[in-house]
Length: 178
Image 1 (cartoon, rainbow, N blue to C red):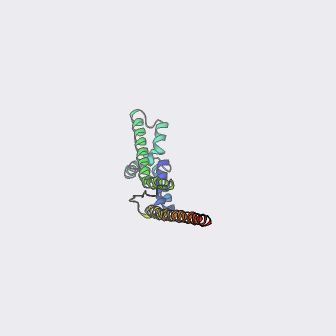
Image 2: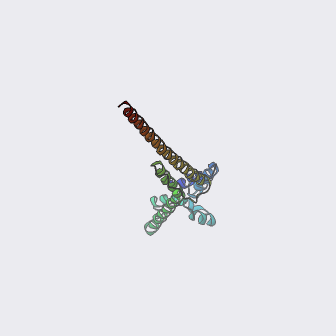
Image 3: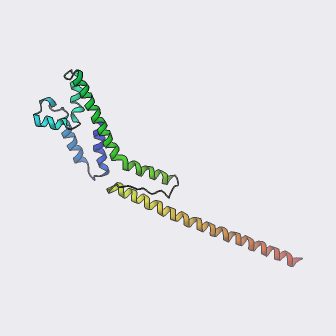
């Protein structure tokens, strides 16, 4: 249940409004998990649809095992199907967050001072815009940092030249006094 809801909530990274997605998810999952009517009572076509989703594994499958409706090999098959759906939903969540994790890793490198890093992402929408904005930010900061360092070098040369001029003037003053 968590892995499915996690994937549904991740849709917020790509959609402006997810209330419709969440509402549809709740309605469909409540029906197909066996909360409204046991999955075994579904007509053949709806039973087949339900079994092609992870929803029966969330409620109906555990109830079947706990009430001994599924025993022995059937119980093991039910648990295996549950585990398969869990892995599939976790893999979906991982796939949906992979781009976000890559953007976060690059942003962490930038925050650590590595302004040469650029975020390569195939993400579209807000995540793609975020990666592009972070790349622009890093490039601008890198450029400004180079300007500051160049100005710092010039200022150092000016200070050194002023110091040399003062020393020279001081020496000339001592020479004329003697």
